[in-house]
Amino acid sequence: MTDDVLDDVFAVIEDRKAELPEDSYTASLFTHEKGENAVLEKLGEETTELLLAAKDDDREEIAHESADIVYHLLVLLAMKDMDLDDLRDELAERR
Image (cartoon, rainbow, N blue to C red):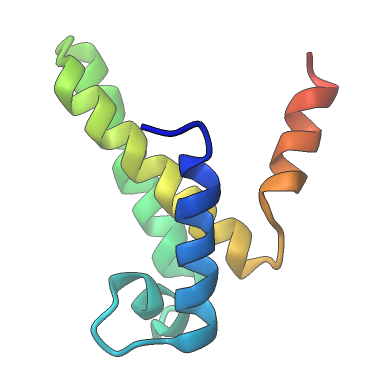
C-alpha cells in the first residue's frame, strides 16, 4: 500500500462525483434520493459494525469496517466540497 492511498481514493471519489457513471456505487451516493442522508446512514451503519468487530477482537473485520468508514467519510467530504487538506489541516492543529 502506498502512502498516498487516501489521495488516490479521494481522486476516484471526486471523479465519480463529476462524471456520475451509472454503474458506480460512489456515483449513486451523490445522486441518491435521500441525498446526503444516504452517506450519513452508511457512516452510522459502518460505525456500528466497527464497534461490534472491535468487541469481538476480530482484526480482519476491524480493518474492513474501518476502511468502509474512511471511504464513506471521504464521500461526505466530497459532498461538502471539502478535500483531504481540510482534514489534514484539522488533524495537524490537534498535534
